[in-house]
Amino acid sequence: MIDEEISDGLPLEPPQAEAAPKPEVPEQASTLGRFPCPCCGYRTFPVPKEEAVAYICPVCFWENDVFTPSENQPSDENSGMTLKEGQEAFRRLVAVRKNLVHYTRKPPPNEIP
Image 1: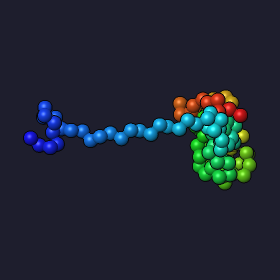
Image 2: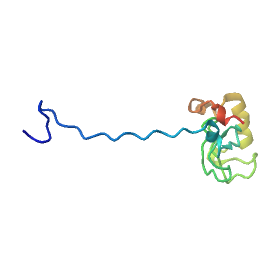
Image 3: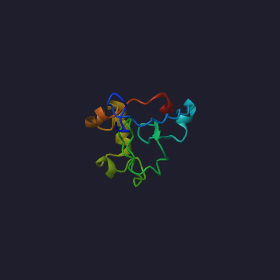
Image 4: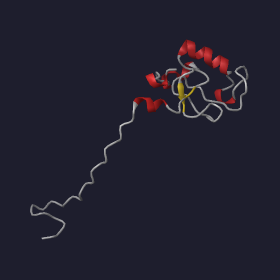
């Protein structure tokens, strides 16, 4: 008989390590470090907008452009759309452009300002 097999001919399985219990995270902690999207205003940014290079908001799908200093200046990251145009489109469409609506999601309670 081979050592790797038990008496009925089936191979032994290696012992399974027990998974460590996941630490409980207080609900309030999930909102820490969240910053508002400059377009929709929901707290979806992991860092301030000045540091969020090309970050795409999952709620409105605005791509942050750190090189556009004003809301009326066209954004290269958003196909020439201005931030003001993006904000107006979000109010009408729930996305910055109609073709991006199906990519967006509703904000969970911890992202609502």
